[in-house]
Length: 125
Image 1 (cartoon, rainbow, N blue to C red):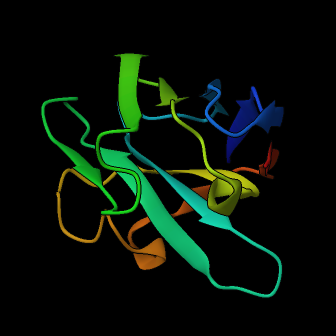
Image 2 (cartoon, rainbow, N blue to C red):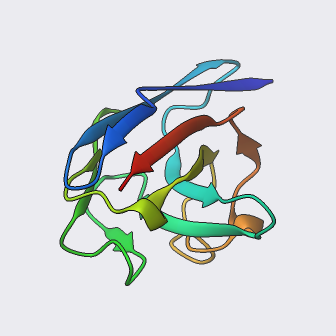
């Protein structure tokens, strides 16, 4: 079993920044493709950003391009730097991971086998 633990959420004013972290532990493979999704109350879980197993390919939702940056410093830890935050970024942010060596599906929830519990991000206006 693989566990994903997110950290770094909180309350911030519009225009501010937060950095989310996600660490994988447990029965882990050598590397994972990893992604961030978010879910606001009453809405579906939406894709935010993803990074390939090698770290060489990244994807972003249009709504966060130019403001958010996904990165990783090893095979099992990734980050989401969120700048210029807006009230509409308010949501629970979930970390996801998958051991498949493919880029297919990394922008969809179906592309991931493992999920964290989520961390709340609240942006006040």
